[in-house]
Length: 338
Image 1: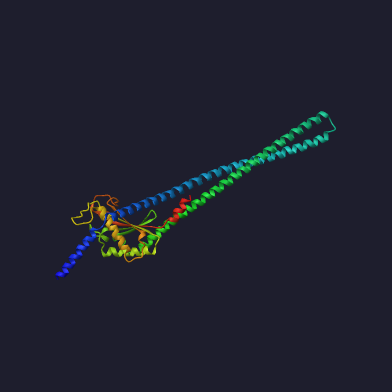
Image 2: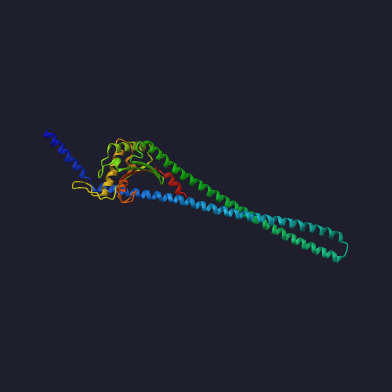
C-alpha cells in the first residue's frame, strides 16, 4: 500500500514539474501567431472593403458613361437633321442651277446684258452650291466622329458592365462558400446549438461560439466530456474541408484571475491562451487535420460581447470562439487584377 502511495506521489510531482516547464518562448510564439492572425483578419476586412469600394466606383463610372451616351445620341440626332437640311438645300440650289442653265440657253441669242445677268446668277448659284456641299461634307465628317465617339463609349460601358458582373459573381461566390460551411457546421453540431453553442456567419467567415459552461469549469482550462464531444464533431467537418483555416480565440470576463500560489498562470491573458491551446489539442487529437491550419490566440477580457458590468454579461463574455475562414486566395487574385 505504501508503494502505491509513493508511486502516486512521484507521478504527481512529475506532473507538477511538466506543467511548470512551459517556457516563455512558447507563450511568445502563441502571441506572435495571434498577432499574425489579427493582421490576416484586418487584411481580409480591408480586402472586402476594397472590393465593395471598387464595385461602387464601377457603378458610378457606368452611370457617367450612360449619361455621356445619352448626350452623344442627342448630338448625333442634331447633326443628322443638319445634314438632311443641307441635302435639301443642295437639291433646291441644284434645281435652281439647272433652271438658270436652261434659261441661259434659251436667251443666249437675246439681249447680251440679260445673258450676262443670267451668267452671273448662274455662277453665284454654282458657288453657293459648292459652299453647301462643303458644309454637307463637314456635317458628315462630324457625324462620323460622333459615331466613333459613341462606339468608344459603348465599348467602355461594356467593359465596365463586365467588371461589375465579375465583382458581383465574386461576392456571391464568397457568400455561398461561407453559407455552405455554416450549414455543414450547424448540421454537425445540431444537438449542441442553443445549448451553450451558436453558429453564425459574418464577414465571409463562420463563427462557432462556445460558452464557458459547455467547455470549462470556472478558472479552469480542462475540457469536460460534453465539450470534447462537440469539438470532435467539429473536427470531423474540418477534416472533410481541408481548405478552411481555423483560429481559436479564448475570451474571459473582466474579473481578475486569481492564480493562487502554485498556478502556472498569472492573469486572464494566460487563462484565455491556455483555453485556446487546449481546444487546439482536442481538435487535433485522433484527427487528420493539418496543424498548420490552426491558430490559437487569447483575447483576455478585451473583446466582450456584452459590455455591461453584470453577472449575465460576464457569463456571455466567458467563451471560446472558433473562427473558420474559407480559402479566398483566388478571390484575392481577381481583386488584385482590378
